[in-house]
Image (cartoon, rainbow, N blue to C red; front, side, top):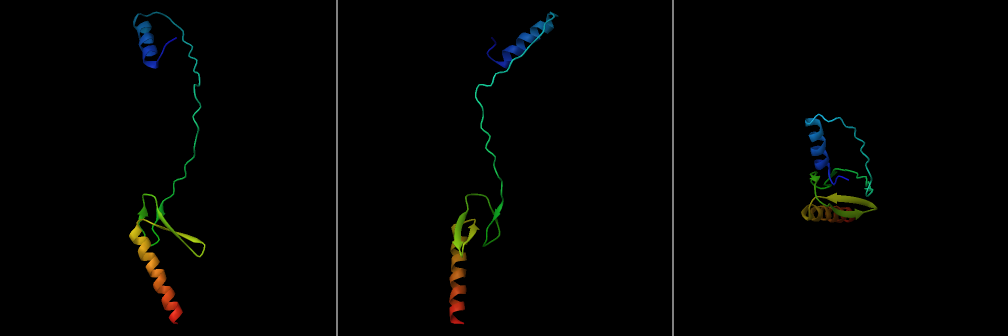
Length: 92
């Protein structure tokens, strides 16, 4: 039994160099099944500034809707904007 592909290649090259006729049968054995995990790639944009979110997003849920932010500053500014709009709405 040949332990790796490189050794197999070297051995076969020697047979070819020596012009020795040979026949090969290669049997591959699955040692371990790799599990396939599908990944979904989504590009999120910050709901405050519009930048693409490259790291783990900051999230905020308001009225059963989830908002995504690129940084804590955008999250803070968004919350402040909501508070301001709520205050204006109450004054009207």
